[in-house]
Length: 162
Image (tube, rainbow, N blue to C red; front, side, top):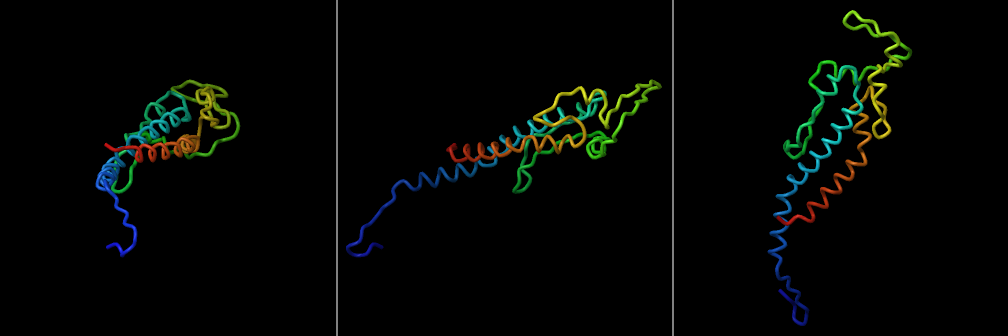
């Protein structure tokens, strides 16, 4: 109630803004799922670019799913279903030059400091060499993209009305 002699400020159309805010809230998860799916695909690309390459089995097995809601969080799951994927990721490099023996064949000097010929032949990806810690390095290489993803999601959420 306004006091005698005081100004009265009336806000018309507030119901429209409340409706917009409710609509924006319903779009939050949709936008986050869309943006984090795109980011997950970039990490998948980097992981494949940085993983070891001998026959290509490990590289072909890497797959990231579309982002999804998991309670209050948005999650992107990815990785490989091959038994040796984690071992290849975590094993320390073995310094020196080693031969490779496969199917009764001998490949002298195939491994140099833990990287085989195929891995050494892959180009760097965003400054990282293919080899061990391929997933970790893909995530490190895309940190600026993660920040951009969050900024883009916030911008899209604030601009959305439908």
